[in-house]
Image (cartoon, rainbow, N blue to C red; front, side):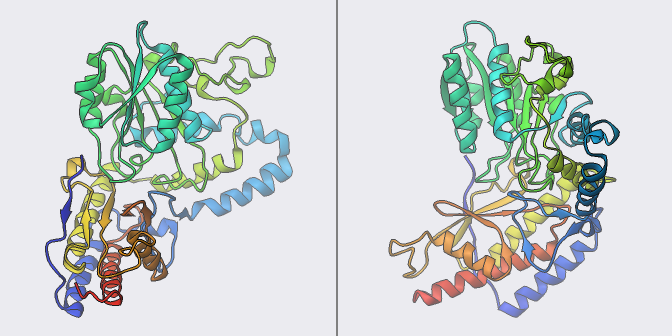
Length: 434
C-alpha cells in the first residue's frame, strides 16, 4: 500500500515563502539537461499538470497533420498506402516507441485502443498458458477497464479471476495461475510497482507477466526486455503526447511471437492481407498483433508527436521527474494549511511514478463537510479556475501529473502556492482559519 503523510507545517509569511521557493525554482529551471524541451510544445501561462491524462500538443503535429490531409489524403489518396508509407505505420511507429519501453526492435506494434490491446494480451496470454491453469491474477488497484476486460477474457476461457495487491503477487501466484495483469504505475496514487521482482516471481511459478504501461511509458525508464516481460500494452496520449484517442501499442516478447494467437484475427494481420483467403494464417512476428485498417490520421499525429523525444535520454526524464515531484511535495508542505492534504504517493523514489496524489480533507464547515459535493472536487475546480490544471479522483484525491519534457519547477511552485491559497480561502469561507 502507498504511504500517507500529512503536510507537517503551516506556511510561513506568504510573500517571503513564495519568493524563496520561486527563486529556487528559477535556479532549478536554468540547470539540467531538459531546459529547452518545453519549447517543443504548444503551451500558455496555465500550469498544466494533467499530462498523465492527456499530454500537451507537440509543435510538430499541426503542420504534419495538415500535410497528411492536404497532400497525402487530398492528392495522393489511395496511393498513400504505399507511396506515403501508411501501410507500414503500425510497425514503424512501434519501433519509435520501443526504446522508450526498453524493447528491442520487432516487438512493438501500434494500433487500436488500450482496451482492445489489453484484450489481445490477456486472451493471447491465456491461450499460451500451460494446461491445468484455473485462474488469472489481476492487480487489485488496477484501472477499472483492465479489470473488466480481464474478467471477460477469463470468463470466455472458463478461468477464475483473483484480484491481488501487486506487493502480494509473489505470495499469491501458484502453478495454476495462467497470467497476471499488473499496472506499472497505479493510476490513482502514482505508486510504482517493481516490474523486475514481480515478473521474476510470476515466472518462477510458470506464469506469464502482462504489464500495463499507461502511466509509466514516457515518464520513467521501462525495461520490458531486461525484466523478461511477456506481454505489455500502453496508451500514447499521456506522457507520449500523441493526442486525444491516439492509438495504443502492444508488446509481444520475441520468443513468444510464434505462439501468440490474437483473439482478434483481422485481414491486416494475415500473412497475405490482400489474398482475401477464407482461412486465417497469421503474419510473422509482432505484425500478428494488428487487426483492421489503421487509424491513419491519429497514427501519423502520434508519429509526429514522438519527434519530441529526439536527443532525449529517458534517464534524464526520470531524474527531472523525481526532482519535480520532490520539489512540489516540499512546496505543498510549506504552503498548505496543516492537516488539509496528505500525500498518498510514496515518498521513496523507487516507489514513485511521475505524479503526486494528495488526499484532501474537509476544513471548517464547507459544503463537502456538511455532506455535499466532495471537497477535493471543489478544490480542483477552483484550482482550474485559477490557472492550475490537475484532476480529481473520487472520493478525495487530487492528482498532479508531472511531464518532465515540459513541466517546470516554476509550474510546481506556483501550483503548490495556489493550492495553499485555495485551501486557506475555503477554510476561511467555512469559518475555520486552520
